[in-house]
Amino acid sequence: MHNKMLPLVTALAALPLAMAATHAQAEEMAIATILPENMSNNSIYPALVRFKDLVETRTDGEVTVSIFGNSQLGSEVETAQEVQDGLTLQSTIITTGAMSSFYDDYQLMTAPFVFNDWRQAWAFLDGDWFAEMMSGTVEETGMRYLGTFDDGGGFVAFTNNERPIKTVEDLEGLNIRTEENPGHVAIMKALGASATPLPWGEVITALETGLADGQFNAPVLNTTFNFHEVTDYTTLTGHVYNSAAWLISEDWYQALTEQQQEAIVTSAREAIEIGHGMSGALATASWQESCETFKECYIMPAEERARMADIARPAWKEWIVNDFGIDAEKVDAFLAEVERVGKEVKESDMAHYGE
Image 1: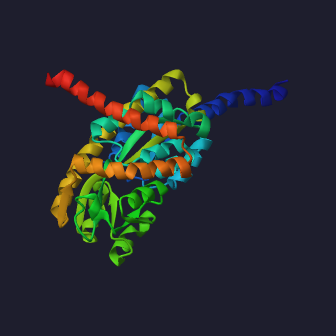
Image 2: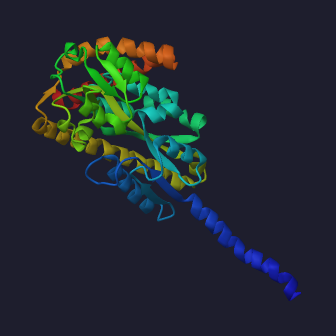
Image 3: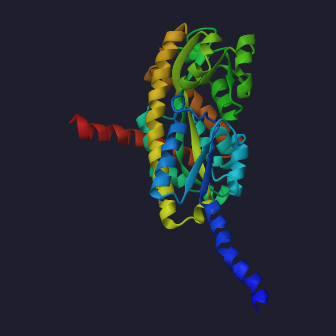
């Protein structure tokens, strides 16, 4: 009898261990980002470190968070595909082009001159309308949206070799490197420049050889990658707002307890706010550095930005509706909500602090 019972006893003894192993796997949250594991040269990694501390504290260590920077786990598209599976990777952060390949509506974020300032951008990106729009990622991609970071500070600045860009006419005839994103190409063409879409790794060589006259990126990137060594002039236009969406595996999320889910969501929201503040600070510091290192720097005034927007936006809208396939009513609703939020922020400021 003893010998016959031994296999059953052994199996029952092993069952808690097997269940514990499965449970432990479900509670490990691995996050991928292409950005460096650096606390001072980008805003996303420090925000993720804070997220890790909050989650592990709020769950008493039941959920552990690991952060993998520097594209250790692959490209943005590759990591998002892994998150869809939810087995080896539970979360990733991907920028506009990659995000749009998984969720079409995110291509709306390529709209030219979409935000006037950070307050408007953050109020919109953290608001109900955008959250509702992004809630569709669960059904369409199998990934849950946690929020949007500013990529490199959001607002971009031109750098080029030919002349300071102070008006739309100054773009005429310039050959500008863009991301491999048709929306950016449409914007450049509308503004009178030609566009040369190139992958990131070819940008410096293109500027050195004259294949491109200039490029645009957030000031953080312009200083980090020493664009002053290959271009002379920089203009802060903010004609594009670079962003990055934060996603987690829906299957993994649903396997968590209610308390663990709450810890993930509330901690992510705090991390997003930390990222906003740090991105603004880094962008401001980098712009000041740009004015010290480039031959000439210039901040485009609101009036000229509005003039350029009137030229660029119809071309972009034609592209996103007719070529990319976003419904025109959805585009109009997106732009109207951005404008409404901007007005609401100003009115609230004045009501609370200006009257």
